Image 1 (tube, rainbow, N blue to C red):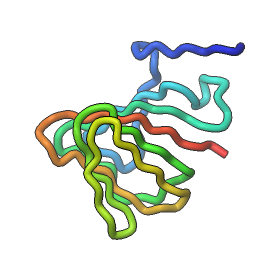
Image 2 (tube, helix red, strand yellow; image 1 turned 180 degrees about the vertical axis):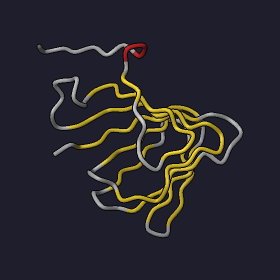
Image 3 (cartoon, rainbow, N blue to C red; image 1 turned 90 degrees about the vertical axis):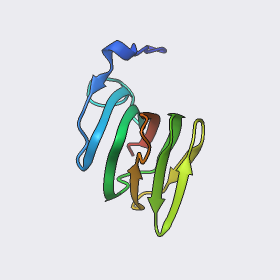
Image 4 (cartoon, rainbow, N blue to C red; image 1 turned 120 degrees about the horizontal axis):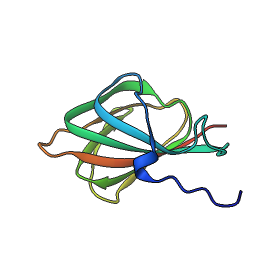
Length: 113
């Protein structure tokens, strides 16, 4: 198959460890898809939501779609807005937090190999 479409209504929800107030769905990758080298997820962060301090399991890019999120890693903190992106190398300790009163959504693109 050369093209695989995942409709947002069919995207597989999952619960990542160490995340509170975050509702992610898997758009590509995972056990039910043929994607082998990366995964793509859409994560919705409610106000006050947090991804706890944890090492990146693999090289990862976050692209903020809407709202505002605070990314912190290795003593640095950055506020990301719509269409801002950040790259983390494998093993980087990071947190993600929604400190606003509005929801935020971001794409998470993660290498699997």
